[in-house]
Figure 1: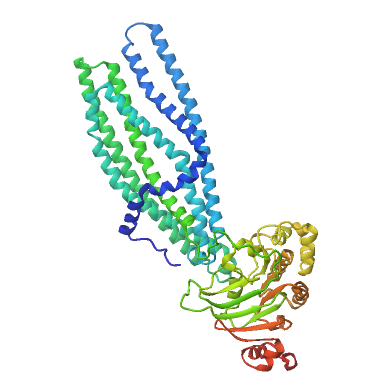
Figure 2 (figure 1 turned 30 degrees about the vertical axis):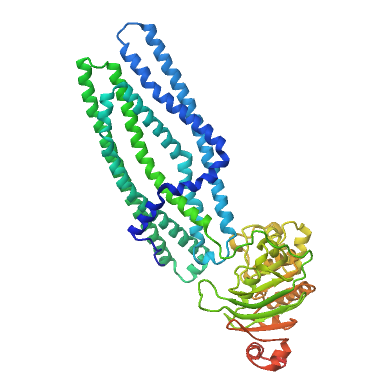
Length: 600
C-alpha cells in the first residue's frame, strides 16, 4: 500500500507557523454554550492559585518567629496553614470536577458535530479520504483535545497564575534577587520557541501516520475474508506494521524533542534558583534580609520555576491539540460537492414519480475526463417501469446515483414531478425514493431492525409483511431468534441472496412512489428470484420503478428498456421491439438466452 503523502518539512513547518495556536480558536463555538461552567471552573482555578501563593507567607511567619518562644503564636500559624491546606484541597477537587466535566461535554459535542458532518457528505468526499482516517480523527484527535480541555488548559492557567503571582511576590520580597532571576528568563524562552516549532511539525506527522494506519486496518478488516481467501495476510500485516512503525518513529522523535526541551528548561531554571539562593544566603549572613524572607523567596522561586517547567511540558500538549483541532476543523469546513439550497423548494403534496432527464452530462470527480453520462434525455412517466441495460461502465448505476443526488450533473438537470432536484433539500425528496442497491448493506442489528430501517415507524406486522413479499420470511423465521436474531457485522450470518432479500424487504416497507432496483436480484437463486420478481411486479404497480440489470430475464416485462453504451442512450423500446431491431440489446439477448424462441 502506498505511503500517505506527508508535506515536506519546510511546507509543514510554514503551515504550522501560520496557524500556530490559532487552530484552537475553532474550539470556542463548542466551549461558549458552557460558559457558566467555564466561569465556575475559572473561579476554582483562581482560588487554588491564590491559596497556593499564600502558603509561603505563612511559612515566613513561622520561620521568623520560630525562636521567639511564643508557642501560642506558632500554634496559630500552624492551624492557619492547615486551614489553607484544607481550602486548597477543596478548591483543587472542585476545579478537577468542573474542568473534567467541561472537557468531556465539549469533546462529545465535537464528535457529534464531526459525525453529523461526514454522515451527510456525498460519495465524492469518500473518493478523497478513507473512512478509517475519518474514524481516527473522531476518536484519536478528539482524545487529544479532551486531554487539553480537561486537564492541560486548567493546569496551564493555574501555573500561569502562579508564575505571575509568584513573580510579583518575589519582587515584593526581594527586588534584587528577583532581578537576578529574571536574567535567566531569555535563556529559558529560546529553547521553548526553537524546539517547540519542531515539535509542532513532528506532532502533525505522528497524527497523520496514526490516521493512515487506522484507515489501512479498517480497509483490511472490512475485507478480511478476501484477504484470507487470497492468502494475503502476510502482506496486510506488513503494510500495517510499516505504517505503525512510521507512526512510532514520529512519536519517538516527538518524545525525544520534548524530553530535550524539558531537560534544558528545568536545568536552566533550577540552576538559576541555586545561584540566587547562594546570593540570598550571603545577604542573610550580612543581615540585609531575614531568614524567613529568604525561605519565602526560595519557595516562590521554586513555585515559579515549577510553573515554568510545567508550562514547557504543557506547551507540547497544546501543540498536539492544535494539530488535532486543525484536522477536525478540516472535516467540519470541507465543502461538499453536493450542496442543499438554503431555502429548499417544497415537493408536491402527492408525489407521482414523474422523472425527467434533460441534457444530462456527468463525469465522476475521480475521472473528470471520462463521461459517465453524455447527453441523456429521458422522460419517465408516473407509474412506469423502466429498465436500464448495457455493458459494464455504460452508466446504468450512475443514473440511479444522480436520481438520489449523490452527485450533481455537470450540465442539464433532473426533475422529480417538475421540480429540479438541486432546488430541493436531499432529505426531503429522498423520502419519496426506495433503493435496493447492488451490494446490499446489512447493519449489525436484528433482522427486524434491518428491515425497519426503511421505515422506522413501521409495526412488527408491517415488517413481517414486507419480509414475506420479499421471500425473506422463511429464512428469517428459521434463525435462532427469528426476527430478533442478530445478523452480525455486515450480515456475516447471511448468504448473499438472503442479504439481498432483506434489502428488498426494506425497500418494500418504505412504500415510496419511486423504486430504484440496482441489480436487485443478482444474488438470488432461480426459485428466490421468481418469488422476488413476483413481489417486485406487484410492488411496481402504481409506482415509478427503475431497474438496473445485467440479466435480461428480469427486465423483459418492463414498460420500456433503455439501452446504454458509453454513457449514451443507443436504443429505447420493449424487449420484443429491441430484439427485432437488432443492435446491442439483441446481441446481449442472444448471449443470455440460448433458446431462440425465448429471444423472440
